[in-house]
Length: 109
Image (cartoon, rainbow, N blue to C red):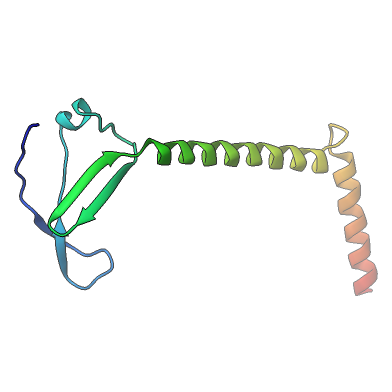
């Protein structure tokens, strides 16, 4: 096992309230030991000890959520298209707008 020494710096707290300890890890060595960019990690925290391990289960959940959101947006676009252009040229949507406008005139007049 290789040992590295770092300095814990100070940074302004994003929530306000002054300075907080700050630790920044970066370098090609992270990828070489299995920590790739844009991947999740798990921190196990104990007094005076932090253990960092990859968390592929979190990445799988993130991917599943992204796929589900993508499917929902596709379904929403299709529903939108079906509603506003069911016959391909928007005639039904135009008729619907005309009905709404005539209803508004009746309610106002």
